[in-house]
Image 1 (tube, one colour):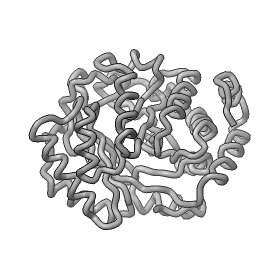
Image 2 (cartoon, helix red, strand yellow; image 1 turned 45 degrees about the vertical axis):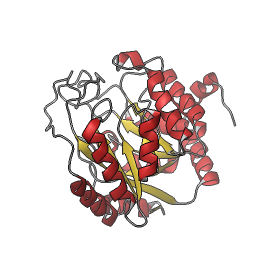
Image 3 (cartoon, one colour; image 1 turned 180 degrees about the vertical axis):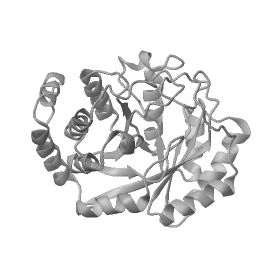
Length: 308
């Protein structure tokens, strides 16, 4: 069913239990009981020229993080093998900055080839704003999926970042799909945006039709402009947003990404899975820690879900 923006806003006013029932039924109609597991590595950290207000890696902000240049190829492959042992079947190579250039891009192509060569394993990457030629090279190297988030709504984007535009992100996602690479395109919830902004995010993603949508919840980091936004969105509002995203995106994998362990209680993490989350980042994130894989597996088992 296609809902109008006003109808989706009205859904937000329904009791959480009713929204959970709606979204859970949609999930059951379109998916089995498996939950995709993905792990990431920050192959290059910090010193990013973009001014995204949420990001600890931006050189415009003052977060206290440990920066490092691009890792070597074998270190990344070793991390991928470890991620596979811990239950992940997708592994994402993530670098800070607008995009990798020169020798860094050449070495990333080597990383992709090494990770893609691991039997039964899927290589993903998140490298910023790329050209068509770079995307073709990554595809030829064995890249299966590319992460490039819209982060927020087109209307709210200027409040979060001014060094690039919303349309730049959309264009990159469209080029990825043009060359047969799956798009992984998500959002960050809780950056001061309105409910209407969140609905606009979901509707923008519906147009892009990515394979998976990571849903991040702002983890306010000291030294960033959003360091005091922790209490701007409560857990019920987060769960309602997950439900809305499932209703708008009935056949898309919805992924628990950054912030779930800090913004949702264990009980409400389970409710999010009931609502329609069927993909998870496992292990640590870029500059923050995540949950242990055995804890996630136990939680899934309690809901008769299995990590795949």
